Image (cartoon, rainbow, N blue to C red; front, side):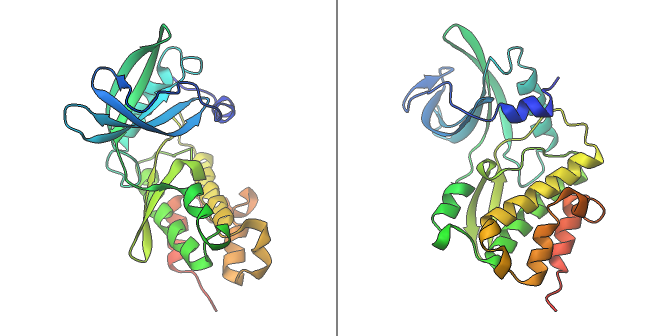
Length: 249
């Protein structure tokens, strides 16, 4: 029912479909623009012709998913996570013919926001301040904690999978994709935590700013290493609690 973790990671590159704005798909969706592209498929913003409601749609490459098993597994996992605020809400599955091949796509709600890499690129020094980064990490930890509490690991926490917008002192965030077929073992939950910490490390400047970081933040960044985080931050809830009780003395 799923790809191996290795083959899934190797599939994250390149565009394939190149649908154009104004093109009509399945006789009911108008293409607005492409959000992102990977070898596993592409993410587009669509408009329902009948209502004008905007949607996002993940198109699965027939080379990567010839029997629609990955698409089906993704749909089921998105449905199981439908009450998680951080996950885009799945609506329906469609199939169209592209160059004589069936292509499946999953239609989800549209979230008005900006991809994390583009957002970071606009910031002074192309990075967030420490406290802004902590606010964003906390928002992500809260969201992924909901996923983990349902016994699921997300498996695809990466900057290009995060869409966000500012809300008050913090951020509202959504995850646009996920990895199907995980066994939800402890190592999968821990990997999610490590990926969140790696994202935090990157958005506050990475190795270029590490020396100047406050000691508690240095210690937090060090937890992104597998050997360090495994005994302490096993789930996203552990990371959320760690952030909420972070000592600055």
